[in-house]
Image (cartoon, rainbow, N blue to C red; front, side):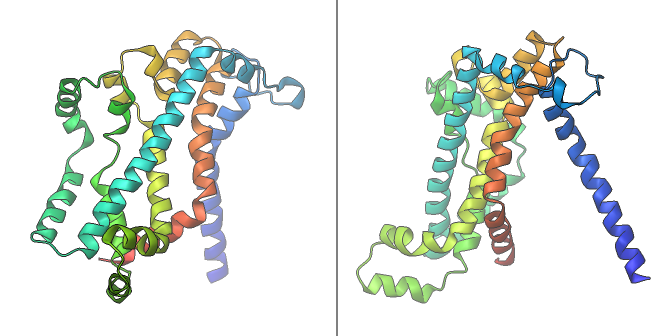
Length: 269
């Protein structure tokens, strides 16, 4: 009976996986076809080519959008790691007045929907004169979520290890860089994945804060190109595939570390 139940569960999970991956498979297959018909389901090697990809990368605007997305996502990852690691270390290992209360207030900001702060954030950024700049796209990326993950990971590090480093004359930054960060690599990679995916797929904030075409990112470009080439499904699917693949490859490369980091951050309180 247990074998039958296990087989049924396995078949059910396989069906769920196929249903979830079917849209992505359809998108990739359609991007390899020279077609204007979304319902053309004839797939053979003779009808597939990289023609659509050559078309979109021959467009200087699309290349500019791609480069902008790479700049924003990569810079956002580094900025988030820096702010989250330093703040997480302070909350986890440094003793100062109001440590727990400040951390609680920081965590409470995670309860506020991101859409709520769009207007005040736009007013602040506009007041600083950062509209249509990379600073406006990158600086708002770090969140309290990153601080939470890094703090949870650093709580697992024994205080005796840090005390030994202090006795040897190491400063707080030296301890963070040489002792703490090598021990929380899994959590850092997990945070990198979340940040990269969020920055790469972000649509609303770049739409609000950029009006110049030279600073637009791929999600915005996808909307524009979709309207421009609405009759050519293959071309639209090629744009969607280029937008989808970088974060997917980034996730696959760090998948094993992501699982370890997620488990680590969930075990400590």
